[in-house]
Image (cartoon, rainbow, N blue to C red):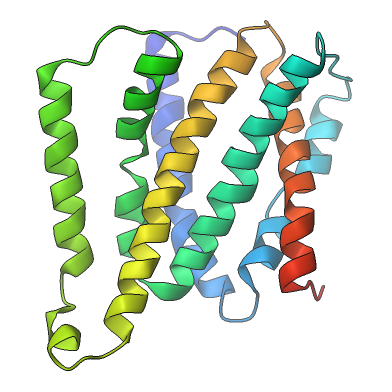
Length: 212
């Protein structure tokens, strides 16, 4: 499906809005559910089959491996890291840190997709953004540091997991773009990503347990 630039921007803005809401809702759900349980319950894999009941046939195992890598990075790793980070630090911290994902996407895509060298403005902006994230992560925690409160280190661990989540999202963005170059339908491609993401959740559920 082709969209104009303005339509694409509107869809991107809607995605940002919905994505921002998930941090608050997940934080609330963590009161009674584990990160792995939320990971399974939040996905509408079957709904995608209802929307587009069409089987996706890839060109071979190499392309299928690309779909699998994208699904595990974008679903399993990304959301496990996000959900776990939300148990250790605030939703605002996690949401701001994950917002750096486009920076990592630009950095990775310049090497993987050969989109050309990165300009000085990007590199300066990247460094400033990382410094800003570090300042946000330490904000309000200096009192805990002075008293030796372990909550500080748990909070910083949560911020670190959120940063890894941003990197996982960036890797997913690059891999999914490469997978989409085959001219496949976007819904069936997303469904295949979700399938491999669900497969990747099996070890997580076996380790953490699942109580429906």
